Length: 185
Image 1 (cartoon, rainbow, N blue to C red):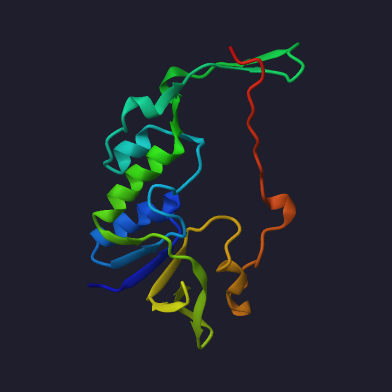
Image 2 (cartoon, rainbow, N blue to C red):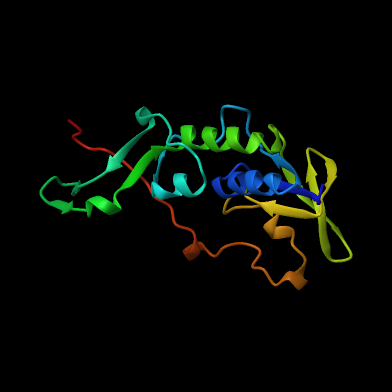
């Protein structure tokens, strides 16, 4: 074993990192605050198909995605339609997020231990260095901690000043998207 890595949160990047690092001989533990089967939101993510090839992952069942071809956007008043046409060679997949995350979780589990209902509460800091994470009140020591818990990370806020990392994103740095369907036929 090369070293111990703690990944906080079952975000896309953390799950891919877990599999790759585990494949290279690291002991990887993923700590996810949600229950098994309840990770992620009901949402769609746009994914470039070559990502699956690059990571050697088969495409998920086609019932969980559609090819994102030409789009029409209707203004809320219904009076204007904006159409966007895409080059067929550059079409993305629009995938349901939960099945995508479940696929990445299953792949990560081949090389890492996944701990559900494991809430990260803070960092273990010794000599101004991150030495681990506090999960459900217990210290978990690690050679490296990867924060994959999202934009509002409690860990980021606790990093030592010497790291010179902004503790919280500014309001204008966080983008919120709302989706709604009107007069859907």
